[in-house]
Amino acid sequence: KLPEQWYDIASAWFSAIYSLAVIAYLGFLVLDMRSPNAVSSPDTLTAQLTNLLKGPLSRVILYTAIGGAMGAAVNNLRSFVAWHAEEKAFGWRFIWKYVAMPPLGGTLAVLVYGILQGGMAVINGGTNTNPDNPLTSLSAWATGTLAGYGSSKVFIWLDDKVNTLFKIDKKQVAVPDVKGKSLAEAKQMLSNAQLSVGKVSEQVTTSSDQVGKVIAQTPEAGTQLDCGSSLE
Image (tube, rainbow, N blue to C red; front, side):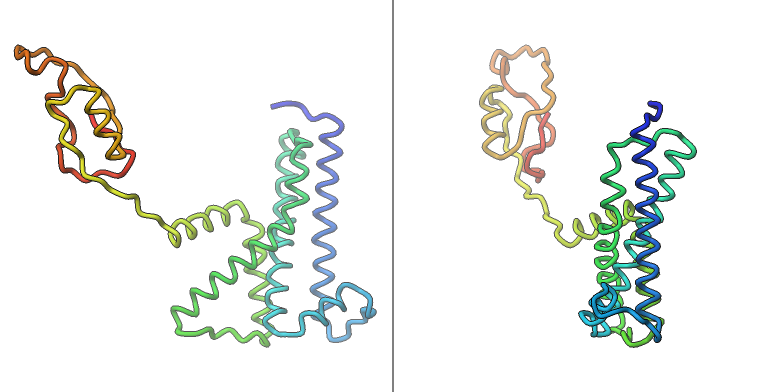
């Protein structure tokens, strides 16, 4: 590993301070919105969000996004400790990752919460979640925090969901019979069938009719193969 330079150290501390600021501000935002005696002026971001998200479902989405951003920021701090404080190998070029992770974590958290709630609705025949219940907001925040903290695992999970939902079955074709054909003819027939030639081996033959011709193939003619497969 490369030793840290002054700009690596500066980038590491900037990332840590930025992540702490995100956690502190979003924590204050949640407490201010939850407090019955909130004293936010009409021009503050808290007041604007409160007015914009008056619907209970909108508030749940907001809490989920805030939790995701806070979870991603916590993961930033964990990474800071591991790469700078312990390994002394923080790279300045990764600063963009630390800056982008909180908003990305918030977005992922909303996606995950929506998918989970949709799955529960299918299982239960409808959603039992009451957006007006304070525990619902707490659950949304906790789910978002976990999703934001484990963003790397969430990407893998989402990829699996996308691959399952939008799975495309490969087209299959029948293997043509290339026995008795020259290698050039066999290659052309396989190409026309959207197949290819794999390993080609030569064998000694006593028949002049078989010289330069295909005398065996694997798999046999008529076998169904995925397009792009090869024959030997």
